[in-house]
Image (cartoon, rainbow over all chains, first blue to last red; front, side, top):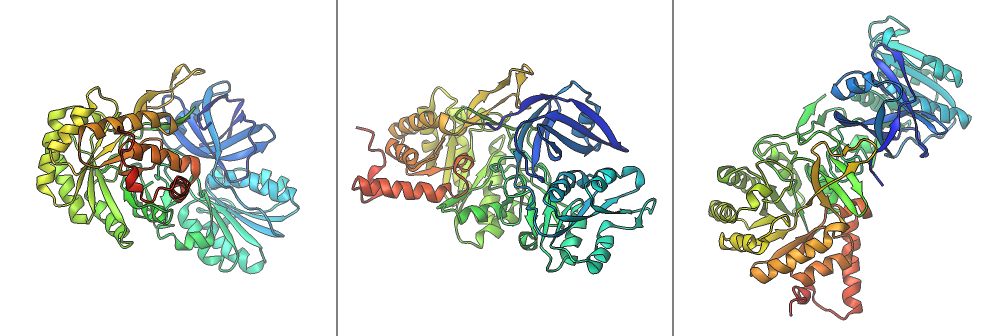
Length: 259
Length: 279
């Protein structure tokens, strides 16, 4: 049943400046790209992509940005959270060589996808984009599973100076890929959609969510595509037809908010 | 679903006869914080808190949807007569084919049920809204009252063109581990299979009390559920939570099930079944 299951936090660790991972035991099988609804009792319940899938141990990685994530950030080992899910479709991971592009905290949910691709003997090239080097995380984790890792920072404090999408453009022209998998700021993903041309792309979207199970309609994009149920991962064809992709999202009241 | 044009358009492809919008108020409203929903044994408990983008900008959603030329019923909620009239006029101006006055949301302070449990208010608001617009006006009532028949009668006297019954049923879920209610608003409204017998009873009672058509709502998940409402006196049914249990094309599935039941029982016209349980 789709109600929160109360879980004790078994580990809470800092990954980078203001970015933390929380681990808990959760038995359900998870496809990389799926998400949980995480209940911080007395505060809020928010969607969180899964960033760790290690047998019965699952985890989420997030930035301390709002009331809910601040409360989550301050929780410690042994504290309780409610977990329901996993929800959504997840990535389809196949081909011979995949380009992964993660921006900001979007990097977190790509990690299990790269790990699965590696498990399937697929070559992985990963671009990690962050504002600066202090906000980068998981670089070693990606390298550990054999991926070729590139870093871009907006301020040039590490790796390529500029946006991850610009670096991706360069790498796309120099290599051949079977698909592009991405998660990060929507403007970045929109640019990737444009530059990936005929290479199939899958992008994981973020929308304000309420029910998480496909009935309330809060997270719809395009012609009724529910980010929680039909997504959060959408392919390029669907995104090209969604007039709001990269243009606007909707706030809790359903009003349009431009990116 | 049904808050934005896109989701309403998608639903059209799933076999619906008409679409009812989310209830719209005067101003944008975020609703309650999450958790706003939890699944229970036989249905879903929610306290969304009437989130909506407000009537001012809602015209773009309706006009965008109207391209499809499918009937659209504009649902509205206000805290007083003046708000209901303003919302009704706007909805008509945007091109909705009918209005549904939400007088039954069980968990929004100052709205919904707080109005719909007062016979005098129901009659006054219905009659003044009727006088302000030309499109049909339906009044959505709640089961969370002791004098449902009288309230339905008040809506009829106010000139309502139809009654919609029921809305969700007031309920609560407590999490044992945390020893506290799951919903941020604590109290919510129960929908789905669990409330179908309540809805069928309400429609049956309303049918005894008024002569205007009734739209049955509450737990309609299969064709047989719809038929039960129809036999109780409903001329149409609304479906919401059924989407969760049987996907978006629940509408097509239910229509097919009704047709096959009719064939099996040699019923030629569905309208012959309306209210047959009253003898």
